[in-house]
Image 1 (cartoon, rainbow, N blue to C red):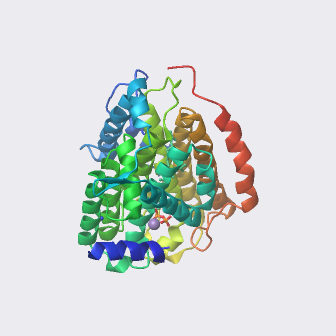
Image 2: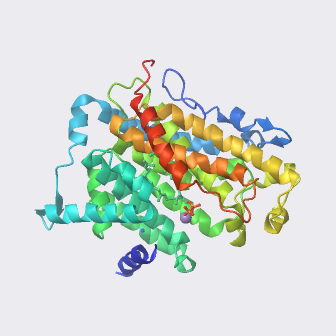
Image 3: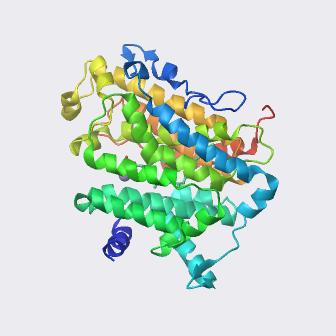
Length: 393
Ligand SMILES: CC(C)=CCC/C(C)=C/CC/C(C)=C/CC/C(C)=C/[C@@H]1[C@@H](COP(=O)(O)OP(=O)(O)O)[C@]1(C)CC/C=C(\C)CC/C=C(\C)CCC=C(C)C
Ligand SMILES: [Mn+2]
């Protein structure tokens, strides 16, 4: 991309369980994921919070989930809802409203989406115009944030630059956008019950990427995945909306959204093992590698062995568990949001199949989903999206 967006950012800079964590009654409780994380597959025993009796990452993240859910619960009350979904207020500049500027800002967000995430962009066209624009604005902010540490100018990025990016974030949440893209997001967050915390946390994930290239165990990796991807789920739900007829607890929908982000990021990590290693990065949990008789050296050597296959099987199994968890929440979303979410879930999940089809060679081969398969997923996603919220509370 990064060129275009990066230039924009730079210019402006110089002048920012899961697995069933939610009880049936929907009330808060200590996450119980530890037991799930502690499962073993073959010789692989996943790391768990047993080794770390202090508060686990899941527990910390679950607090954010509860906070976000509380905000959206308000919106689900009919009277509040109307107000929250009213996207008819234009940007105010110098005390005067500017409809053209706002529309242009959203249009530009749409263009960025269309350029960098074509399938996703097509999916958003199925949403209502208001929601679609809001999702574009969030997408662009996330993409720009990722570009800071992954784009062509990443080597110049310092923690200070991320602090400035965060200051810009605070400003836009307070109605002082810095540029067009910020203006679109500023408008979005003033119309939907979107909280700043997941945005801040995503920046924190980028800070982690600057200073950390190894993860001791899954608890550490889980926190990283929350920062850079689980946050996207939490940002998106208030905009996607929960179906009015949904009987699911708001927390359970948020937990599913979080799980989708984590599943996507774990999949990203499994797909990019070779690419990341060439940048000196190993995201795979060190303790799990060691238990499988593997080390960083095996990853740098990049040879697919029986040990590696068996290790990868366990990693893929865990990523699929997160996708399964996410699936539980999609039907609870507003009808117009379900199709794009199903489509993205099914498409991303197939990357795991592609890794298997490559005989677990994620050192030299990049797993991807064939165009035809992508295309075929769309009607499947549509079929699933027709199914609305479960009747059970
Ligand atoms: C109830 C329920 C299931 C609701 C759905 C909630 C929902 C819409 C969740 C979306 C989850 C999602 C798409 C997460 C993105 C995860 C991801 C791939 C994060 C990437 C991070 C860094 O990765 P890395 O650097 O390792 O890899 P790259 O080589 O750079 O790819 C990200 C790149 C962070 C930036 C994320 C984005 C640009 C995506 C933002 C997407 C949205 C705001 C829209 C989400 C909406 C839909 C319909 C999928
Ligand atoms: Mn990236």
